[in-house]
Length: 171
Image (cartoon, rainbow, N blue to C red):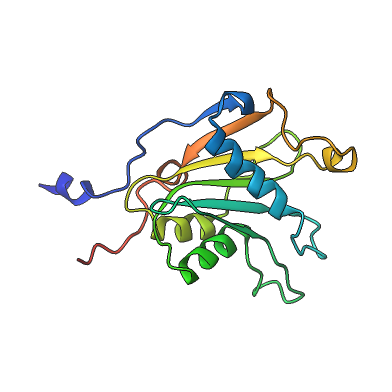
């Protein structure tokens, strides 16, 4: 049947939802904090748009972080998500249980770009939870905690962000 052609498509296991930071378990809060901290090291002299990402390795539980790194030629720029995952792969981790992405735009969550979504998908044999939050820079200047209990967090997944995504199915 023709419907058999879609049986291996990525299908999200959970619907997207927005929850409060305070309702998340400590391992997710740790992941978000790691992304917030690495975001401070972003090299974004051209756009000024800083992004931080963190991914937790499925086997070891180790967190790998990355920030965006811009270049005057733009094409060789590296997004935070790809930086974090490339670091992880270079250290032997290729399976992940969760990821976090932080940037700041008023009134909207900043989710991974299309290239990063495909890059994350490469390492997703199962759906990977992705947590997206806003990084409030004013809290850094005020020496406040990066998150407050009522801050909104988008809980999504790579299969939600990139449904019916491309993946080679070679065994």
